[in-house]
Amino acid sequence: VDYLLEYLRFPSISTQSEHLKDMVACANWLKDLFETLGMKAELHETPGNPVVVAKNAHKPGLPTLLIYGHYDVQPPDPLEEWTSKPFEPTIRDGRIYARGATDNKGQTLAHILGAGELLKDGDLPVNLTFLLEGEEEIGSSNLEDFLQKHRESLACDIIVISDTMMAADYWPTIAYGLRGIASLEVIVRGPERDLHSGIFGGAVANPITAVSRLIASLHDEKGHVRIEGFYDKVHPLQDWEREATSKLPIKENDFLALAGSPILWGEEGYNTFERVGARPTAEVNGIGGGYQGEGTKTVLPKEAFAKFTFRLVPDQTPEEIQALAEAHFKKYCPPGVTIEVRHGHGGLPYFVDPTSKYSIAAKKALKDTFGKEPALMREGGSIPILQQFKTILGADTLLVAFASPDCQIHSPNENMPIRNFETGIQVHKALLKELAACR
Ligand code: BES
Ligand code: ZN
Image (cartoon, rainbow, N blue to C red):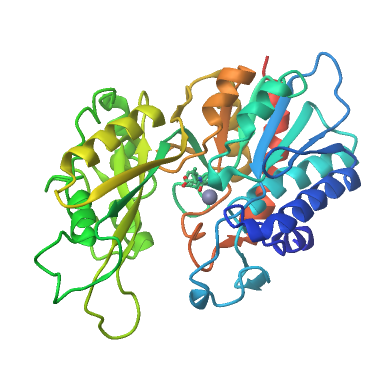
């Protein structure tokens, strides 16, 4: 727990360039930790934030396991909604509160410390490689090149990641699918400067109205995405999967409570877990333009913007969805304004066979540790580099969660129950034992 508290004190916010120094300091802290625990560690420069690679002494003949995680975190705002400060980790009611406590510092540190304990006992049954990056929360755009360059040194039989969520509180869970992501920003411009809305209102188009119309054009009233071609590559849900989602240890009402929303609402024809795990979506993440201050200001703004992300399922690709969305926005942009569409980061969706020998080994490790059959589910979040692990390193990934559904990742008061963290260390040990026996 002391190690985790130290790790959480770095404000390693990858999306804000002012934190560059903190990124490097955090990566160096990891390198030192690996060395303290008896592993060989290296810090690699990239065009972005450094990558940390650490290994035990690899022996020929043993299976090689790569564990991936990220030391970067999301911005902590809104700050006023935190009970304790986001980078001053605080323990309350058996939970550690801090940005990154779960996503992803707590979850990866459980693996690191598990490996450290096994090393100390001279008991490490596999070749272990840790790969920790600092750009996951901004799309991992420098990691693909890094994998290409270091593919030999990173060669492995199987990859394990703990960056997903448990299906229910303290319920062992393996995710066998994650959604991909495509991000995009629309900027609509009208008059060359902000205008008096009495003098000019009615005579020129309003960019905020135009952006609002574009946002409204994205869905029909049944929650389907209206972009032409959006669903062309989407596979229908299979019967066994629909049956499996109905048996998950979490019910719609539990999910509603977690969301803290008035009701659950989404695409017609699917239940909540199907909507989140197996259906693609279009979300607006931010909107701006015009006067945001106190009181009123009669202004006709010169421009407005909206930021979007699309969650993707197999076989959608970010490039294709960005192109379809751009065509859609250009087609539906009302007259009187100009539109600029900027493409942002992207990541492919992922799907792994939940019946492979490695998945079976992971299920056994979880069952032995928790004394409970693990849940199998497709989850809605994205880990952008996942598919590149498959194409570049040729290895599948097991997604084993230590985070309970109420850990509030990306939200204020993110936290990690100490029990989950400590069990994570035990899961790591059990996993290594099972994977070592898995030939
Ligand atoms: N840990 C999440 C991914 C995740 C969340 C998987 C919930 C399954 C369930 C990861 O750190 C994350 O937030 N990824 C971003 C990627 C994006 C910024 C490119 C995401 O999903 O928004
Ligand atoms: Zn995240």
